[in-house]
Picture 1: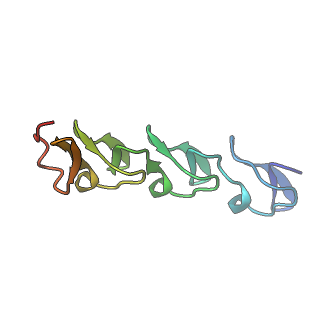
Picture 2: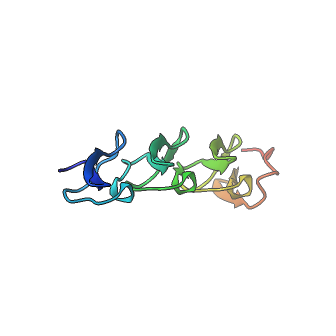
Length: 117
């Protein structure tokens, strides 16, 4: 049966909202949807402003969206005028965006965030 797995000779429903293929034989074959991860047999939502692929099994598989970084299992926004790529994991990955004579320059030191535009 779809969304069930065989558990000690009986069919057991996957934890909501996880899904499984017909013929699944263990809880490990139940997959949480995108933006979720499996934690001790329960689908947990990724932190706000984070995404994950279907079937993720740890919070660290949740990736923060652009201009956010992961800290203590939560997504934090980069400082004003700083940007980061999807999946950033530290403040140091936020790059200052500075406008100098019509050109955009990216500084590698996120702590230097008082640059003028």
